[in-house]
Image (tube, rainbow, N blue to C red):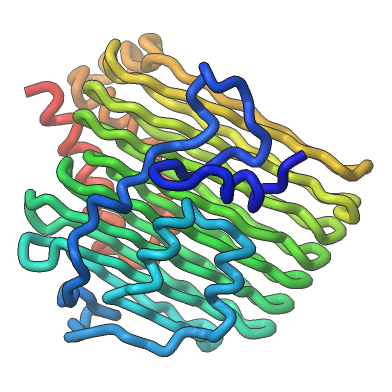
Length: 368
């Protein structure tokens, strides 16, 4: 069978995030379209800040082997990886124990192009937090091609938060790659407020014994937006663990794809993996597509997957309305409750409150 890398190599041009094992073409879930060709020529980016301090430019020196790591991992597509090498923002971060870094990248008419290339290296035994908040500051046509590579050494722990709050004229491609050593872990909270086109791609290796990767995703997809959530988590180490849990709601004419693969490779005895995705459909015109895959090359492993999609529970809506809430407020409370577990992982109270209010604001616009 084709490997992930071989399959991606065969899919050039406008195709990306290819499933490790292909299914029938008529299902149209094997890959997504990318828009690397739509990116304008490189220009400086001046919407970058760290811990509230604006920086005129972020051009850290990156590890020499970064290109080789991405070549092995694959990323979204070859064309996006090639364009990402010509980044206008580069960040190399090695956290200290207990440190929290808040990174904010604001796209706008003055800063319409963000090509960010970042590396986080978590040393042995270090626990730290990093928040990456990417925001559209206005309604301009915006383009983003982002990549983030995370290396976690033995017994390291990274609490990672990724927030995308972009407008309906944004094309957003982001690739996250990772490698985790013995006892290391990534605990990821991901908030996706999608209005344009977003391809979010996670692909990484649980190399060490008792290594762990966990991601909670909370999403709202509205308008004519298209959101693709892609995961390829590969289990190598003994007793490694990988968990992906996605909850969200779709509005208007939007489309969401969840394509998650848990791949238990030879040698990963005792590994445990679980992926679940629940979508609330707030319109008859939305599309929710889920493709959860389990691949197994090893005995004595435990893998689970589940996906569901449906309308709001009318009994629950009625119960809340019987307690004095309007239908709008009842629906907003239910939707928010599905995303709150993800929001709770955000260390910054101001950002957490902003995102929670955005949920209620979206529900308010729907019922005006």
